[in-house]
Image (cartoon, rainbow, N blue to C red; front, top):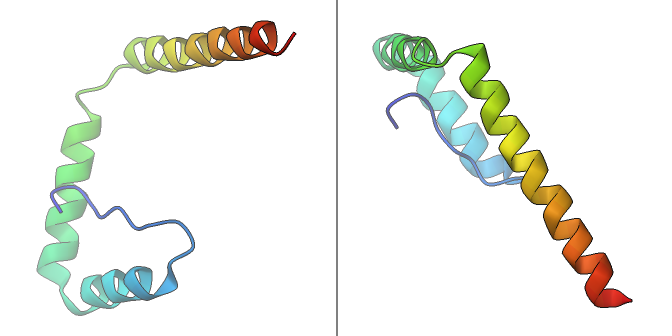
Length: 71
């Protein structure tokens, strides 16, 4: 609710509710947009790359453990 909304996957009702809310409330729409833009300025490409690399590394390790355990 500070930079946007998280909507459960494939749940059209809550998605439609939030879209309708944002369409009706320009002040909220602008505030969420500004907060999201401000938040994203705190990230650098290097930081994002490290984070993605960490997640991918964890996935590789988990896949290796799963395959070794299945043998």
